[in-house]
Amino acid sequence: MSAVRPLSALRTLAALTALPLLLTACGYGSDAADDSKETKVSADAKKLSADEVKIGYFPNLTHATALVGVQEGLLQKELGGTTIKASTFNAGPSEIEALNAGSIDIGWIGPSPSINGFSKSDGKSLRIISGSASGGVKLVVNPDKIKTLDDVKGKKIATPQLGNTQDVAFLNWIAEQGWKVNAESGKGDVSVFRTDNKITPDAYKSGSIDGAWVPEPTASKLVAEGGKVLLDESDLWPDKKFVITNIIVSQKFLKEHPDVVEAVLRGSVKTNAWINANPDEAKASANAALKELTGKDLPAEVLDPAWKSVAFLDDPLAATLDAQAQHAVKAGLLEKPTLKGIYDLAPLNKVLKAEGKDAVDDAGLGVQ
Image 1 (cartoon, rainbow, N blue to C red):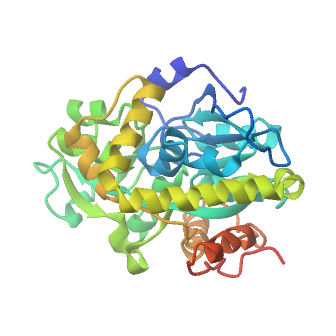
Image 2: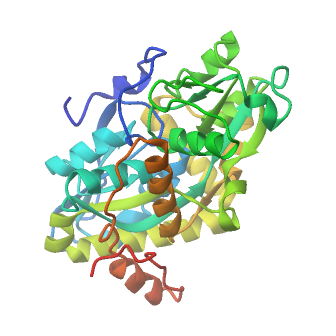
């Protein structure tokens, strides 16, 4: 599969089938799209060590730091004359492939593909250099069929993709209830259907599934169709925080252009600060970016609750990424990975210090 596909792929509906990928996407489809959007810079702006920086992200709300940072020019402002070339992706595998091929240098991506990309390359392909978002994942069910958590047993519940971040979380939750499910087939005390988020609302309306463990905005789309939030995954984590989006960089680009990486991180930190200080403006900006990328914005009844459930932060919440990896191991979807060195938070902590903010921790998984 090529790393980049036309924007029309964003609108292609996938079949309602299990996807044979392990620890891959964040849960927004399996195709990539390239808008090849280059930001405009003034002719007299000073370039850093690279003429351009190629960044990748998903057209969804959990990647709003990138959406808003590009839309509002907050990332470009920190880069001066170094141009941003932005590409969007629908899933982690395509973005990791693009990073490995040099088609992008820096990407916003979920924990599972970060772990997978690092592990498959024996720790040589990428580093996680920052957090970006937490939360935004819910178990939404048909209230006529499921009224309590115990009622989930015996029902048909969708997750975005076999082995993806939400799939692993749901399998782990099932195990904690004392129920049994074959991770590969999805069969057992609960029937787990791996369904592309783009068609999950239609599957729910048709009665093919009884609920779904999904990220935003799919969760709020299901609620708009009459579904009920039975569980917010944030409630299962310490301090109600867990990583949903990281920022990664190719190790080659980090080594060759540390000034560019630092500038992108400054832009990310300032974008998150602007989002948190101006939530309504930021929400509108993210929705405008989504309309430009996908041809369709989100209606208020979906956008408003979805936006509220995502927290934008700089901390990568490293301990929760390690926990997610262990959940995948326990489910039998991943051999125990060696994650030492997956983080390099020195550039981020330099930026945070300059902004008067506290340093963040790598949970012992940083470079030596």
